Image 1: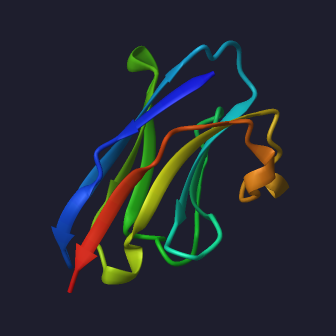
Image 2: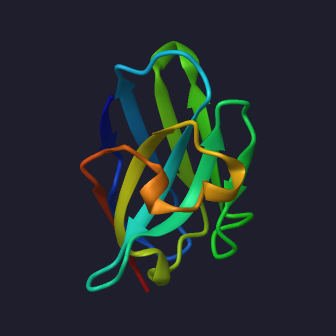
Amino acid sequence: VQLQASGGGFVQAGGSLRLSCAASGRAGSSYAMGWFRQGPGTERHFVAGLRYSGTTHYADSVEDRFTTSRDDAENTEYLQMNSLKPDDTAVYYCAYGRGVILSNLRNVAAYSAWGQGTQVTVSS
């Protein structure tokens, strides 16, 4: 599985961005897609997850501001980010994991393929 993330950029606080993650090589079902972010000198943290069933899960810090979705025809996942804050500044990664159970959805180690990351910078 190969993932290509795009859509990052520079935005003022309160603004919006939409990230895309184009996937190739996926087959079958029972996989999950995740979005993670990593700030300078920090660990990679869970942001949002989209299970194959269509259910979504979010970190508390982005709940009600971020929405993840997918377009099956385009093999692409999206992360719509609204009401952005300076604390959202980070490199954002999309990830693929096969057979990821719900209790492991937020775990970096559960994902086997990662996109290259896209920088999001939010100014105050």
